Image (tube, rainbow, N blue to C red; front, side, top):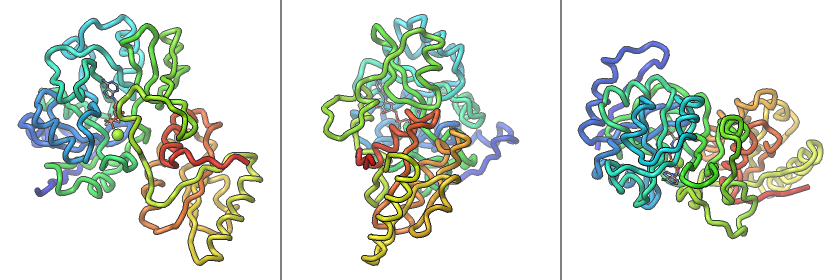
Length: 351
Ligand code: TXA
Ligand code: MG
């Protein structure tokens, strides 16, 4: 299949530029598009064949449900039943934006889109291209992250092309995703709102609006052997992993530097190159090894935005191993470490 690439300037585009993409979606074809979190792989949410094609293109297990993207908060009632007051409150505060809500699905939503579940995930993205595409297509857009299943999510069109070129109909190149981590997912179907996936909108942000929120057990997991079942089906799969084994090194900054530098030297002595996932503050303090910088600790958001990009970049270098600093003390640390721990298969070296 030939994949058409369309470049759109997020800050200056007219609707005509999106009409073909909108028509593709409406007619059951697949279009990858930018959102403020990560790129999405979109198809008509009410078209079971389109859903099937999304799973096939990503190589994703079909029991892993898709998020339905809307352009108007008023459309909640078309997709969900028994909507609690909390959903309207959250929509008012955080939509459009990086928040996904799990609600009881309406009959209109096919089970092919929800991975067989009776619940549906709904998000209203703030990215202007995403919002315009949904509106112009005239349908709701089911979209998982636009990456091959198991690889880091994509934050630039180049990464989408790498994973999905030849497998989908169109890729809209709208530049970099600003946030860089997937949306926060909150399940509103139980007694207490439950965070199934941490993201840019934090537990504190949600608690400020809702009062009480809890984390699903699987979210705060720190080791591969903890026997917890994640409530978001997608969170149980191996994720984000770079090709080389990745170790997170935690401790006082000086100890971390010493440990990583000693390990890098050991690899070098064997003729192997080690990668280091560092920050602007520390990059110069690693004399050997291949250093990649996720962002600066002065601005938490830069690290969130750079994480997946950095993990992907290591794959192009052929390093034998990667050592990463920890970002647990970052204000977005819950979300960042959730992704990094998965990428590392929960390998943490605590000094
Ligand atoms: O930021 C995002 O959310 C991006 C952009 C494209 O919007 N999308 C995204 O989709 O990250 P995906 O499919 O990669 O991740 C969706 C997660 C999966 O872990 C899935 O299992 C969970 O949401 N999920 C979807 N529907 C669910 C449901 N009804 N109940 C529980 N978890 C659900
Ligand atoms: Mg994903």
